[in-house]
Image (cartoon, rainbow, N blue to C red; front, top):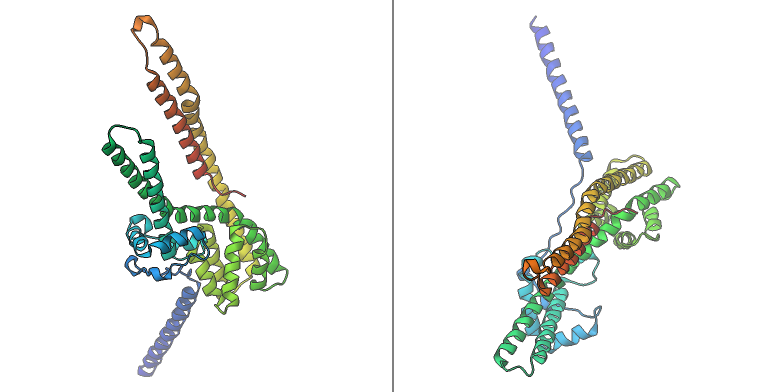
Length: 349
């Protein structure tokens, strides 16, 4: 009896060790299949800006000449701009926008543009005020207008990379399904991944082709394929491209029919695009009704009210200034609605 009990105990221990090994193997497989995380790009803190790296060789020579006239002055302005909230992700936005420069050079460019805006606007208002009796008020208005122009130009310059990066992301999303189908077809025809990617990069896919050529350059420079794709996913603002790249990396690591996987990704991206288009169409019905009310009904109401108030029984009428303001507001609101519609439009090829 004791011998049988010992044998049963040994068999239980062996089974437990085997099941433990099976669990470890399953965990390893699950860990390999887990979606790879996009590495966060490490950017320098705002205080680590080095304006000795300013290089205007790829920019208009005028800005470089102006900057070299007073580099310490413009560097001080650029440091102030670098501390603004709008400049928080400037370096990432520059890379995503495909602007061939660094953060220091772009901040120097923004400082030159802002200073030039201050000078031009202040001089303009001072010239317009020549001949007025109140000289102090004229110069006060000129300087105040120059300061406003200075900050507006600075904020616009710092906001441009992020705005341009969003536009590039929209262009990439528009071309992405076609590029993925092209890539899947090339791989299915027998080309390896890098040659198939080169074929897509040579195609006319706009900003997407540019990003793929940059990735191919990284690969040809010795960077591993998965790391080059990681860099592509990290610098782009296109969510569709991020998801597609991460799934391709996972497919390259785990194996499988790459052409079928990429074709499936293309189908998923196209389906998401159709869903966005359907949602946009539903929203457009409500927006179009509001636009008709503002652009058609509101001017008619303003015209009728201004005509009614001209009657003698009402003792006067609406002033011409109020009518101009009303029509100006209608035009401004109409353009704002059109701008919102354009911004909300999904990327459809």
